[in-house]
Length: 296
Image (cartoon, rainbow, N blue to C red):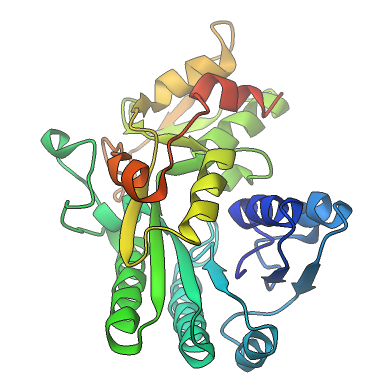
């Protein structure tokens, strides 16, 4: 599992180890951490951690030796990383994963993509966003996200490397760093007793997906949804200011405001219909229950 010590990866690792799978985590620990894997390590299963960049030459030899059935590629563009280096690492590691899968044979690649990065600023009339929506990436993150999706399709067509790409909405939950998403930023502000910063007027909407629901989709993608890009979201749009009201309550100070960022989309919500059909998946954690799990 590439990126297995990150936010999403560590939760997926915990689920797989608990189910008795053999898991190799490949992570340079630049944005992920061994602390994220503490729960997985305590389970006593077959877990090996390799402090390694997937783009390094040693990765191919490791993959050949371990001969996995599935390679998960997570955390392509970690929040807070320098754009230029993160973009280069994302493409280099994706090609390394696909080349390893091609060389080993009979290996499925499952990739987590940013849905906002892939689809861009979609008109309200076309939401919830379906997989038929044309890709219109915004900024470097979006261009890299599309390039990764295109590489998956090319390797499937030319080298018979099977894949499922999950276009994830805004995933949140325990272990997420404050810069990893707005829910984590709000939770951090509440713990510190300070007002968070909201870019724009707070009316922009997002589709917030709890980490356990995202992990369940990733597990199902190991054996389902082959050759597809599948949207994984709740189908429910929540504004940023409503999110703050839910998390902070009526007595807490309002957030500070800052100018809207250039690559920020006004509205975004995903249709989970294809996920229901091809992954037999549906979200079960509503937002109020999810944010309660973060505590104060």
